[in-house]
Image (cartoon, rainbow, N blue to C red; front, side, top):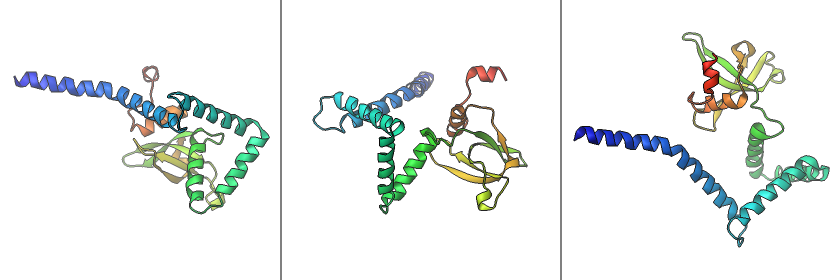
Amino acid sequence: MKLILANILRYLLQGIVIISPFLITFGLAYYVFNFIDTLIPGMPRGIGFVVVIAGFILIGYLGSRLLFGRLLLDLFDKIIEKIPGLKVVYTAVKDFTDGFVGEKRKFTNPVLVKMSEHPIMYRVGFITQDDMSKINLPGHVMVYMPHAYAISGFHYILDIENVHTLDMDASDAMKLAVSGGVAGFNQEEIENV
């Protein structure tokens, strides 16, 4: 009887592990869809989502392709940056999103950083500033090292000799760092090593 209960418990846990990524992904997608769909009150289900996404596409087009759109966005930036309190939140969010997906992406240069000599220990990071001479540290770089399973991390200013270029796609390096080493390598890459 104990063996049967142990097997049932084991299969239950395996089922949870197998189905959890699907449930979380589709639950999050449903939540985002639902949130976006209700941004415009009174719209039939699904139409609000289409209108909001079309609006985002239009704003993206106007902001990146047309001079008038760029000038309007710059004016909006200047107005927000003069409002105390909002300036801090707005610039932090703007810099963060630009760092990941904007034209000024910063997380494109993955590196390995030697953290200690005995034992030799490395961390995965991304060079965000490749010249620190403005603060009297020539030959140094700034490296962002994300925490595993979080969007937070630390910035370190390091001697360039302790930073080694990582021959890896930046998105794979971010997955590797943020997942705590669980993700980031494709099976083909592991077999070719």
